[in-house]
Length: 376
Image (tube, rainbow, N blue to C red; front, side):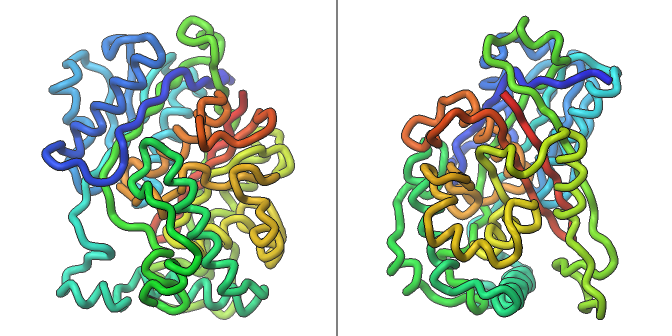
């Protein structure tokens, strides 16, 4: 089957951009990706795109150009961006198309963990999602000996990395003590250990691998793009009860399938982006994606292995904690960051060493995961 290359990447800064719609942020990202690839909108044969709160992605054709291209809207919760990329990957892999774009954007209301209730409801940690994440990491810490100290260090790393990224929302590094002293929302997770709803856009241009040199002298190759849903018994948000026999998460299935598709293993990965809706998620996802055994995160994080200059850099742009989470764009931001790292264009946040292979993982409610493996 046809191999797939990434030849253009674009991103609109994440955070708050007053007076700019979510769709306009998506268009900004697409135009940047088109310029990066040296092609025009009219050259694209298809698009997959998604947004949870900023309108239908396909409506951007009215501003980008009515060329008649196939444009399919994607909606998969927080995994929308990863699912859009997986769809674009398959469109080329199947031989149906030669070149297209995956795009995601969003513009969420202010207010962390907003639910249809007064502000105090979410701010006091009563929202379903914060309770779920708190209970999940509580159980994991009890089962595998992860300490509160390690949980705090994950958030400290995220804010430090975000301060080095020109497109991150949170550019002020927070100290260990500032994070430790922030209010507890859903025990053991504190205010500064959660990500917040945000704004932003990201876009990736893909083509047949044998055409890549036509567009760029620094192509990257999408070796795998996989999405999987939950099994009965997996510990997922919105599940009404915990099954007696616990099943593996959809992340485990997606990760195994991605490594098999790419013909690679966890030891081949040089840099990774892992879903970090909150600090505990990054810890658990290190294991669920196969990068360590349960409990080994304690030593890896304490010894700095996941720092930018560590042996396994994770979330080099600060992840969701520093960037916020505009749902449609988040998974493609991860891909943009890994591509930037593999190109060696990370500037102050560039991971050390000769990076050849990167990995992204995005998790969405009510229990689905999308994984990519990208190689230079």
